[in-house]
Image 1 (cartoon, each protein chain N blue to C red):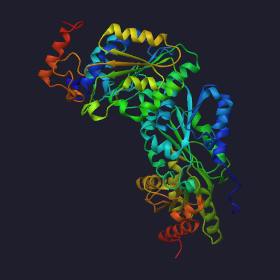
Image 2: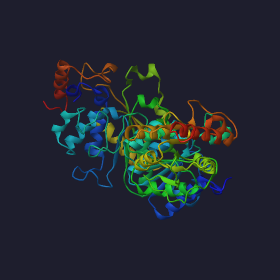
Image 3: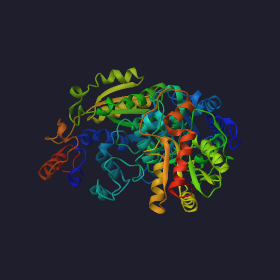
Amino acid sequence: MTYAAQSGHPGGSLSVTDLITALVFHELRIDPSRPDWPERDRLVLSKGHASPALYAALALRGFFPREELASFRTLGSRLQGHVDRTKLPYIEASTGCLGQGIGMAVGMALDARLRKAPQRVYAVLGDGECQAGPTWEALMAGGHYRLSNLVAILDRNGLETDGPTESIMGIEPIGEKFRAFRYHTVEIDGHDFLQILDALDEARRTTDGPTAIVARTVKGKGVSFMEGKHQFHGKPPNKAEAEQALAELARAPGGAA
Amino acid sequence: MSAVVGKAESLRDAYGKALLELGEKDPNLVALDADLSGSTRTVLFGQKFPDRFFNVGVMEPTMMSMAAGLALQGRTVYASTFAVFAAGQAYNFVRQSICYNRANVKIVATHGGLLVGPDGGTHQMIEDIGLMRGLPGMTVVVPADAPTARAATFAVAERDGPAYVRLTRENLPTVTDGSFRLGKAAELRSGSDLTIVAVGALVARGLEVAEELAKVGISTRVLDLASVKPFDAPALLRAARDTGALLVLEEHSVLTGVGALVASTTSENYPVPVRRVGVPDVFGESGEAWALLDRYGMSKERIRDEAWELLRVRGKVQ
């Protein structure tokens, strides 16, 4: 998608793909035939630049035609550069400017609790986003209101646009920070599906407050020349790189090959 | 106080009481505040409906994203704080979380403009009308008195989508009958020589100057443009045609406020001389509220001088 568009954010999309896959294909109570079903679970992609990962998952889950993925970032497309709820089914909140999606998720979780609805709200955050003050405002609010229907999932790939988070503006010890903000915190390998599903189960069992899942991931996961490279945060692959990337992903477990 | 304006009343109290009434009628309505509920008067709602009131503390940006999240679940949401925090501190959250998401959030900001007084320039928000008017999909209302503050609180609830209502800290004399409607200007005084277009606290001053001008035979129309977006373009253009000159009064930066709106509307459709009275391109300072208006170019004398200048330009006086 980012190759076709010749813009976008491949690195952070690949790091979060396993987490999104677990959510969209397993955890979330959603129904592609009824994207507006009022009691569906909510997913807010606070790191809205990882839109390709969510678009691909939603298309495969049947929310819109797969053919539409090729229109990503082009004029007239429903697949905006950053996710847009007014255009596509089951985009719960338009995001992109960081530090806002988690606040919207807190508002949604408050509403669900007021209505005594069984609905759960999942917010997927980026680690660069954890440098933003309002991220912590919103996390503080989720902890203060003890929103046990809220799960904050951190895609901890360690890299942001200009380089490693820890050399630019360190966010560690991130697990301790979540705990201090009153989150039941689980730290996992964000590419191990058993760990992801266990963590999501643990969040469901946590009834006295919100849960944070710190998922250690690899930026550019699955593509050898992108892995661990901040240079592919906001840069698309060229033709040769795209072909190699697709071939590598196809050979991976669960890939098309 | 001249005879043309009524008793001074609190716009904030009018808002607080109207919000309480809305809350009684609509169990789906929730309200948020950022540690200023006593000043913004959302405390009235909060005391009656503690379950539907969220005082989030000093986190105005996140108050806006939380408000959006609540609204995206189908609720009508009111969020209040001072104008400098609502439109300034939280701008990009109002932009993306609320407006870009088309969330049904009504921001009722108090303490707009220089009338904040002694708190000084840091807290005197003089750019909010321009900032909020520039946001796609945003409704903007600047009430001139308590009856309009009350009516506007109800009116924005009836229109789905984001809204920004700007109130003043100071009590303001009643100048309208409270029959506010979105998109409609209120003609508070008819006239044929000149039109004063005003919003907020300066509407009363405009009426007082119009009364003085009447004593020397000048007929001045006065329009209250409380509905800034959508605004009543036909009423403005009628005024331009009928009176040939417009004087705009606002307690806001003249660079980006209602004066800019009036000047661009007339110049594109029916060019007539327009003069703007408001805050020049500077920040305010501490001082008694009404003295600040005089100091920063919004005195009655200044308004009168600008009116005479327009009348001279139009050849209506020597």
